[in-house]
Image: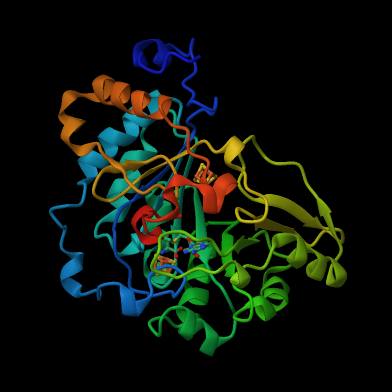
Length: 349
Ligand code: SAM
Ligand code: SF4
Ligand code: SF4
């Protein structure tokens, strides 16, 4: 069993922190804002979530400051985290985000600093994100059909803005962007091939994500899920694919290459092929609560302990990770969290 409670020894690299299922802590998602300018029906349906207003821009008292985020991330890095992804809500709504990126990019031990965005505000921010030291970018894009795009953003988004955002990101030096597409049966499953056609031949990687039962406000039903295996067959008939090895242990997306060399496609299959056994990811909500699973019903507030200093904070986090036994996707309907679960826009995917 690990020695989860001793960050001093952990920091020396002689011991490895693992949870109850022997999974290390390598990967941290940080939500910088709990709201969004879109209302995607699968995440934040307009009729069941509060309206976003300009006043949400103001730094909410409940939101961690950049200094607090930096201190927390430093403690996670002490415990073995080397990959950090900023998310939301919509992270580009958070004022001054490049300042936070610059602070995090300076932390020794972070090998991968990435951000996931809906792309709506990217055109005007891409350069500042790159200059601040962001390594990688993921943009969510579910369809290239302008009307369906508008519908899937809850009537708030414009396809052209996202395409302009991707173009600006390319200009700013983001050479290989991940394009996330959540596939829903009968909604955008017919948009999969056109999306691939658009990005084939570039370094960008389209990743198809099975629609998940995150939170409760989307009223998910299994019949809405298109299993990745089915999608892979459809794509393979048009453009033959071959499987690739994962880049690293715990990689969430299964990787495939076009046999003709036109690039790569990914599949995130957490409903049909759960990957809890390799899940090395913690999630920090914008209010400072730690969630050890995307489907957790409760989080642990870390904010009150930030002033104790990095080592003590790391010790608390190590203790929480050491107790972790989450494996919701493997249990699904039988999981204890099956009733009440944190919403996706609070923990950012
Ligand atoms: N607002 C940003 C965006 O949309 O990229 C970042 C936060 S969003 C919650 C992160 C990712 O979660 C997006 O790629 C989104 O498509 C995905 N997502 C949201 N709800 C989902 C669901 N129910 N099932 C699968 N993926 C979902
Ligand atoms: Fe906003 Fe992203 Fe959720 Fe859509 S998926 S509502 S863009 S947070
Ligand atoms: Fe990780 Fe929880 Fe998803 Fe399983 S269900 S892969 S433990 S976040």
